[in-house]
Length: 147
Image (cartoon, rainbow, N blue to C red):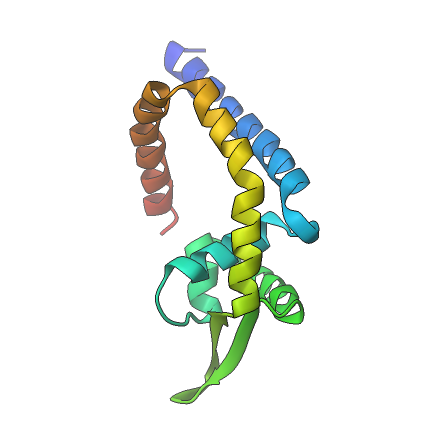
């Protein structure tokens, strides 16, 4: 095995393990049994202006339409989003965050911030600044390769 191979395996092993550990910690602190996928969609809808179609959301999160539909159904049942027909194209639906969804997103942010703040503090701002460009470049490369 070459040094490049060894480094590549180590990098992806660390990324996958860190992802799993972070997801476990976030799941434990998110309020009201909120799932990470629910928080992610609510956070996205809170940050973007206007409505999104389920297909646009699925593309944004790199998940299948079926997976996104499942998440949206749960969020709608909780009253966190509104789904309405697209008046210009009856085949499409449009999704918007509700006031309840904004409150749930804010509660989730309040719940996860101590964890995130502690991790950033422990790692140090210089390490975070150094790691972010590499992680962004990796993400962009992976997005470009998905076609």
